[in-house]
Amino acid sequence: MNDFIPPAKPLIGDEEREAVDRVLRSGMLAQGPEVKAFEEEFSAHFGLGRACVAVNSGTSGQHLGLLSCGVKAGDEVIVPSFTFAATANSVALTGATPVFADIDADDFCLSPEAVEAAITERTVGIMPVHLYGHPAKMDRLMAIAEQHGIQVFEDAAQAHGAKLNGTPVGAFGSFAMFSLYPTKNMTSGEGGMVSVANAEIERNMRLYRNQGMEKQYHNEVVGLNNRMTDIHAAIGRVQLTKVDGWTATRQQNAAFYDANLEGVVVPPVAAGAVHVYHQYTIRVPQDRDGFSAALKEQFNVGSGMFYPVPNHRLAPFQADVDLPETEKAAAECLSLPVHPSLSQEDLERVVTAVNTLAKAGS
Image (cartoon, rainbow, N blue to C red; front, top):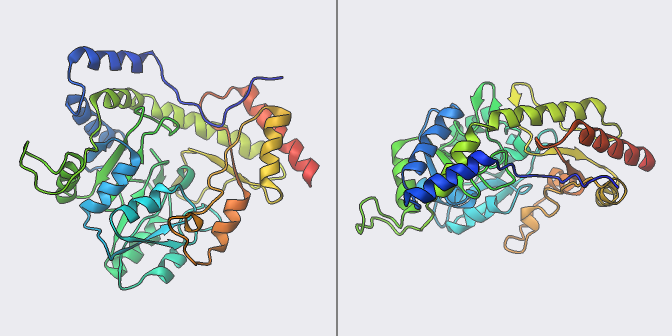
């Protein structure tokens, strides 16, 4: 049988190994000059035009971003349910309540209409997720937030380099979190990067990530140890030099699928949007789980289901809300391999596999 085609594959080369060795030789392993350089280079590379703060995970970044923007117990933050649990978890960890709103069918991101319907007197913010690497409808969501005097917090975990009408994701809200987990479009081994809209949020972020201290032993707030190490930052700095090429390859792979897949619903791209294809997610209206199993068993092609259990049905939340597009997406969505390691032969095998199974099931 042909070699297995994995749904995701981290890319770590000799340059990353050399960068780690450089840090190990330096003796400065914790938060130091590599972290500072990575923060500055990340902001410049993606054209964010704002400061960035590095942390030890995307979830940490999301949590600290909310704390830094004043979100607290009794508040409500509107979030999608069709996302990884970290989105709602980060809100709950502040003591606030995540309020689940539905998504739009076209981009799998928060529906502006659903957001407007979910706003109450306790709403302090909206947290769209740029899911799979496609930007949310930020122009409309920002207008809603301005109209109601609330903040916008971006979950950009999967969207390094995505744009809407020329503006990069991460440059819209009060803060934006980018994940640097190994399977993301770029990695630092583990970690997160948070872009911030102003100096006050930036200072709060730096306090919260470092036990509440700016000056050692002079703790100003109750903080956490959410610092990034110089080892991780060194890996991230190297990956910054490669991510544009990887993104272009992801987009080329997606274009090949768009042109050749049959019998399934391929992901549309909105006008003015730059999709960076963290995932290439199709819809399989009939027996998605069986389709995924057959891809592996018959063709040795991996796939992923992101996310089969919506957040509002998870044990910690159990929200009684009607989210029809969320439920439909959770039942139909299947992500195909789109990562930069795919060969042309791999791409053709994926297409053959999908088209064969779609035809058999039609």
